[in-house]
Image 1 (cartoon, one colour):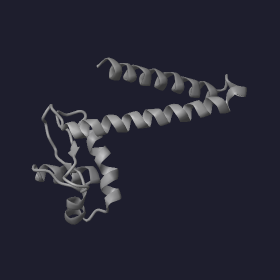
Image 2 (cartoon, helix red, strand yellow):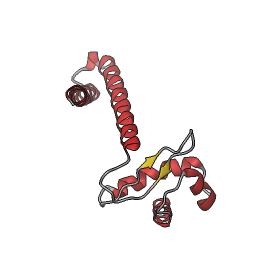
Image 3 (tube, one colour):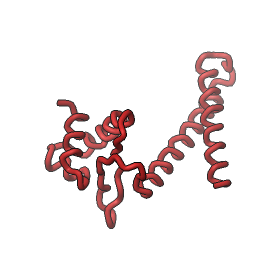
Length: 136
């Protein structure tokens, strides 16, 4: 079995939820292996009606992951995912702009054109998201 299959089976076998420490104890995985496999599971689940959201536990403990088909995902997880995506998009925009600046002398080069398309697309996406935040 693959790591994806193993974690999916573990999630199905723990309907009340689990955290990375449970996976470490039961599957013998170090935390990095768990962290590497969760996105693979989510990628697989996107073609189903299932999701693998996680919610914070009390205090600063590890988050609880739960395989679910519920349409309403935990708000703490949703907020965290939007914050993460916004941070990644902002970083992509800044990196893309650096690449645009670095290719000014070769603006028509493949790299220069790619950088400009990234800045244009990501910039527009961030503008649209900011507008939604402002207007509600």
